[in-house]
Image 1 (tube, rainbow, N blue to C red):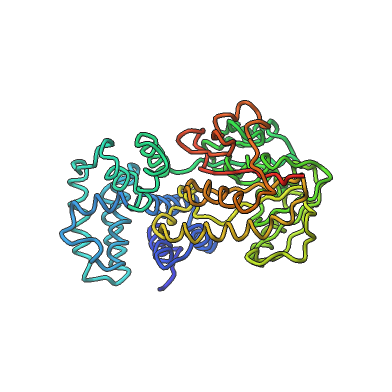
Image 2 (image 1 turned 30 degrees about the vertical axis):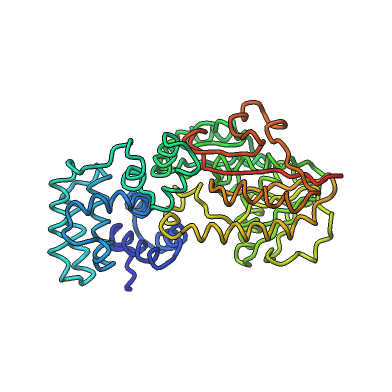
Length: 452
């Protein structure tokens, strides 16, 4: 593939989508392409919109395309289908892009990619799409399965998962939320500034922002100006979703404690723990991959977190270099399916399956078993995942407690602000959902205490 990301935003988007189809992560490829491009701010935003929008709404776009394509989509060349999605997404979702521009630019891109045999086909399908898209027979909300798949863009396996987890009305609401762009939230770094001062700086830079509903350090940016966010170099903030900001609070940390962040990269929660303890706790951060350990170190330096020691370790093996029963607090933000953050990593819905969930649940139990001996009697272990699947949440905790009677489940609702009450289940575990809780990501957390 000839990489020419400086040519046009649509060419850049096409090449990013091709690499994602080959197994790459959208955010990493997008950052790489934009870093070496000469695209202006407006075109960069268009690239981002096209990539994330097409990945997020691929099911919706494909349903619409089937109304105008005389061949099954799965029989098309991957390059042709990618072009059709690129053009159809603009026609379906981007009012600010004139229809002729969406069609013509896609046809020209087909020529540029030397797909000469497909130029006429792409042109014909997209022109038919433009003429008839107002009359597409979308499934109505009452047809819940079809609605989730073809309007909310959920694959069949994920549709079944949503319907297992929630009643139909709520499954539909969650599906609708997962089909929308996520909010842009920041955690104010209390080691450097406070929320009120940061909000004032954002206003002065002509950004529209507001305080998050639950997280006391959280800020949501509703509209960004062309000015840079204030305090980036100074470490005033960390990009982080509000649900993720709650996790460090739920660990109940204090200065003077010995704390382990077991799967720490890229370090957002680790640096939050350092801030909550005013750099007065001993924090160990582990991660499987050396480059991700570097991210923890770099993030800690940027935010002024001097209490973090980061080290590479694969926790599928017992961390024998750490003394048993030596930690007051352990955070395990475990590797998971990421179903709760599909808005941010939308390719996940197309790359995962129920088999992946089962494999991840096994991995989560393995890591829990390996770190449990490190908790002091009376100490606490917080298990968190950014997903809502039963097999990775309640089932993991239930099986762990059955095998580890030395631990007991704590009721998080009993020790958190009353304003957070709606975030917790009857068992006292955290379950946040975007359709229920101010548009934050879907997270699960359970806190376990080792009996004295």
